[in-house]
Image 1 (cartoon, rainbow, N blue to C red):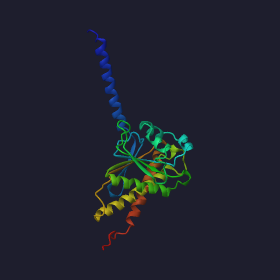
Image 2: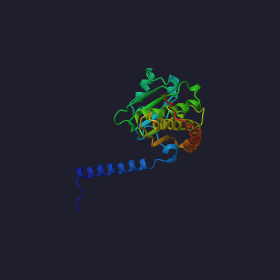
Image 3: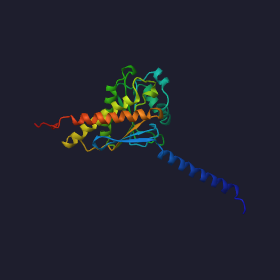
Length: 246
């Protein structure tokens, strides 16, 4: 058998390499560790070992403390990689004072093409780092859900990015208990409004909680607790109509 000419052989090598790369990428996407959990109103909450820059979702939510040069220097991991893929958009907004990160301040970004997989990126401010509380994180959950309802998206991914900003005041499980509880209670309100014709149609099918390898199991435990607490809280709410008539 005659050996293949150099050019066809090189082309064959490239094709094989591309095919192998595609298979590896597909396998990696399928192998993302996750734990699905069922919540009230048919919401599936998936704790996924995934970063906010790789999640394929209509809406990605991330949180930032109030900007300071010192805080920016301490930042590592996911938020650094996220902004790198966005071409520095987040850093530009924060350094210029256009998204400072005041308590519950929000800004919605349409990611540049071929940057991250999310269709929209919501930044939520946490205010001064010293004022971080679980009550604030529950409010973050409510704000996230209401923005999802406004946009009409059925899937959301959430990453608090608190540890990546150098803060360990609360455990990752505690943070997710607060966020998911706030989200589920806000969604219950949305469904009650819809039932009375006071809100537009909106269904949340899936809420993804992004967690790093070190905090995965703790995060799963926090989400389980949130589902239990939200179920009890919604069950205790008044069944009387919100609209009392004229």
